[in-house]
Amino acid sequence: AQGTGWGDLDSALVVLSPTGSMDASYFMPDSANPATATRALGVVYAYIPGSAGSTSIHVGLFARAGAGWQLVRPVQGLFGQGPKDPAFSGDRVEITTLTLHPGEARCCPTKQTRWSVDWATGQAVALN
Image (cartoon, rainbow, N blue to C red; front, side):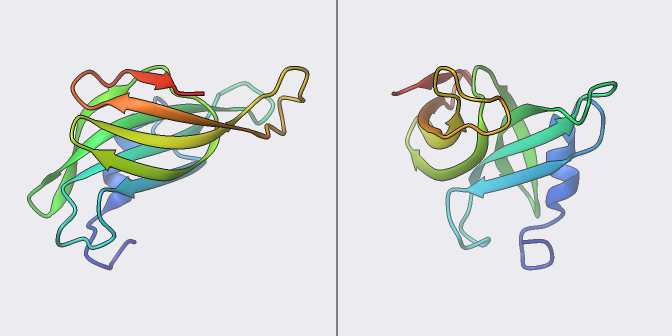
């Protein structure tokens, strides 16, 4: 989305990273049109220093701020890989990630978990 009306998303999202770097990042706005988007969910996976290639997840709620985006609040309690299918409604945003089934290898989660994130508090709750 860089260069297509979204502004500098890397600069907006890097504020979520405790190390200042991003192994992967996702920006999920409430509209596919940058001219009408006003809210977004940002997800950053940051490398954990000293680990054998492990990453940690950091999530935040963003709001349009002029020509760019500003972090409104961090999200607590959401985890998983491959975030997808964001759905915004009044006071919350829902998103799906892959999490572990019991006994599943840490590398390869396959369980789809749907989360609800409260816009006012940033608290995530698994719906399934």
